[in-house]
Amino acid sequence: MTEYLNIIPGDEPHNDKVLAHCAGIIKGGGLVAFPTETVYGLGANVFDEKALLRIYEAKGRPCDNPLIVHIASVNELAVCVSALSESARLLMEAFWPGPLTMIFPKGPSIPLAATGKRGTVAVRCPAHPIARRLIQAAGTPVAAPSANISGRPSPTGADHVKQDLDGRVDAVLDGGPCPVGIESTIIDMTGEPRLLRPGFITKSTVENVLKHGISQSPATLDTPEAPGMRYAHYAPLAELIIVDGSAGKTVEYINNMCRESGLGAEKLGVFASDETADLYKNARVISAGSRAQPETIARSLFGALRRFDLWGAARVYSEAFYDTELGLSVMNRLEKASGYNIVKL
Ligand code: TXA
Ligand code: MG
Image (cartoon, rainbow, N blue to C red; front, side, top):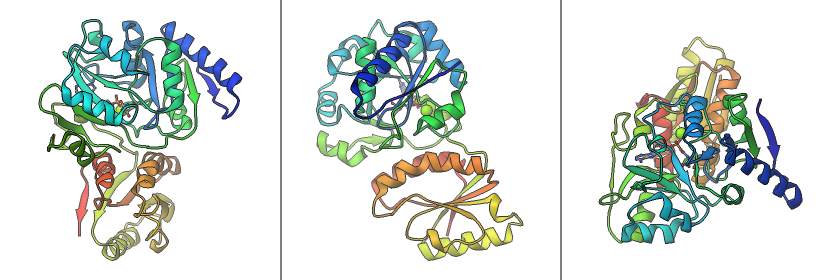
């Protein structure tokens, strides 16, 4: 049985009680899904190996795919890592708390079950107040992958967690929708800094802080550095096709394909932008928001993929959002979700 608990904005006595209850579940070896600014995480005490194994089981996650360790303050970093570079210090100062995960040589007390048997550990200090209060109350760093079934779109609302993990976890803490909507930026800090997963904190912002360029691992499914990137990801049940071209050509192409598909409008979806959403015919359209505000596109992406599934779409066309740096982070997820099914016009 999964318990569902709500954060009520402004009702602090209630929230304190709920957070203490969830912290108690984590201390007792249980699993709690909780909101972060990026996506919902599925948390357990990082030092409890049995609880870590339950995370893998609940998600159906391959056991060589390591977890991110979440801390509430930089003081907790010492127990997690065995070395800290000057560059890492700079990035921590600039971006923590926030949507940045860094990979370090692991501290001896971090179980190998949390790191996919690697000698390195991923650590993040989230900015979301509920996440921070929960970790603090639990009194331990909290290992937390995204709170979805492995391979499904990441959860940006408590309802998404329920769709995937009902009955598989002890509690779901509903703190509303996640403001960022895509997972944290991951940078490997064990050698020369290297971008493993792009996110809301972009490559150029990181480079501005470090005052030099950093490398980026190619966004293919077989990148060895972040094992999670190897597996099929975010896949909706529908066939997903990205259409990359000018606005006019994209609308024309998608309308033609929908008309010729032989599928009814209720089986066809389009993930569009505000600028073009009204131009599509013969399909159910979800607008990601305006291209002038790529943050709204990031925020709506995973929820939209899940909504198309709930609608029973057989095929979904998506506009491409390569035009901004945050758009590139969105496209990193969309490309994977589509299995690199991209039409260039
Ligand atoms: O925003 C986020 O990062 C969210 C929230 C909950 O914090 N968490 C999240 O976790 O996205 P997850 O498990 O879905 O993705 C973690 C990624 C995986 O691709 C994993 O392979 C990589 O981080 N990772 C974890 N530890 C690593 C390590 N030691 N070396 C390389 N990659 C690592
Ligand atoms: Mg994930």
